[in-house]
Length: 245
Image (cartoon, rainbow, N blue to C red):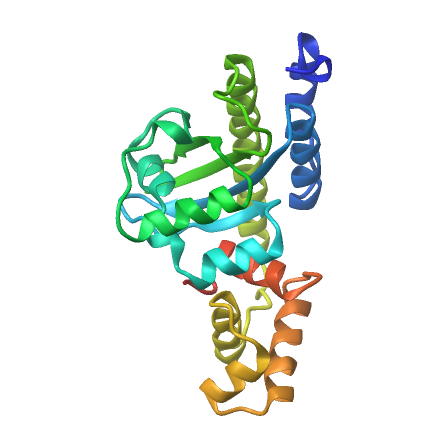
């Protein structure tokens, strides 16, 4: 563990997460803290208990090309890490997962091609039949995760989750006071196909729409969800439960 997150500094960092005023600020502070522990790709999200493949990301630092590839191949349905998280009550290293077979082998090969050999996952089983899942892919080659790094990541995820729940509760209370700006069925349909790796031209052929019309719907969805690009719009829509893959 680096000096920045040792001793009392880790407590200061955890307190900083609880003081985040919104989701973007929470994500920024969390990513800064994680970067001080090591060089990782990170993904976090929620999924229903007892059903793999339903992860709704709320934060990810993986490359856009990898996210598109993962969603387009429906890897969430065979990801052994998600399956393990649904039944595990504590953090675990990737290499400790059960032996894999079938479609999951292709996912493992693709992860290796991305340069990842090991990682650490943290599941938090919530009271609402859901699991909050965080996973950290280790970019540097190392035989194992140091114990202190695993402890620090677990604490950061726990604190992130607590503030995440608080902010969500506040947002839900505000939504009850007014009508939220939801996506139209067509916008959700177009975003779903983007999640499966389709271009605007592909989506136009599938839905029998003009390509410009597809772009119009995707731009509207991007504006409503206040996202800078298509991939982040897909991730946001998944997190809000507006679409599924």
